[in-house]
Length: 178
Image (cartoon, rainbow, N blue to C red; front, side):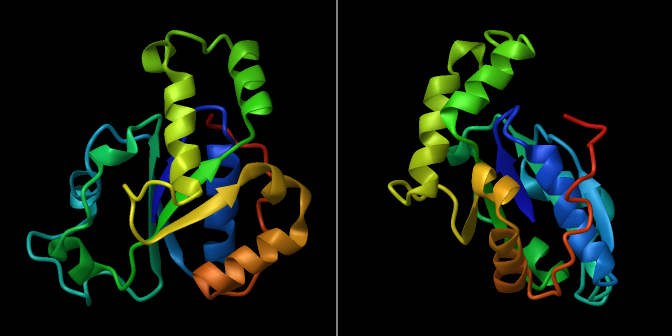
């Protein structure tokens, strides 16, 4: 899973929840946070020189988080990666702008991160979620507000996109990151 979100959008809450869903389904989970490199470079440490589908068990889920990144900077996942993983998903998270900007102000994340261009980044992520742009293929959109308030939204998301049983594990977990 490649996970894209803006700082203070609820990235870690949702990532912890996703990990909980996979752990309850018997998966080994690997999480790599806020990478400044491409997806293949981020997962290289987990792969042998010539990965084969047998290298990782069928029940291994790798989630790499990319926070505050321009979406058009991410090329498609190459064939080397696909040989080691059955499926690569791209999750794009969007939180409503009022709560996102209020949280950033509260935590004094104004100009230090994104050099004051948060509005531009927010618009980019919103357009991607509305399919007005297509920088990321095979993407799955998560609406943070709906995720927080609606258990059926979470349940439908898990069963439709992950094809594993829904448990809601880690929903109430307070993340140590983020």
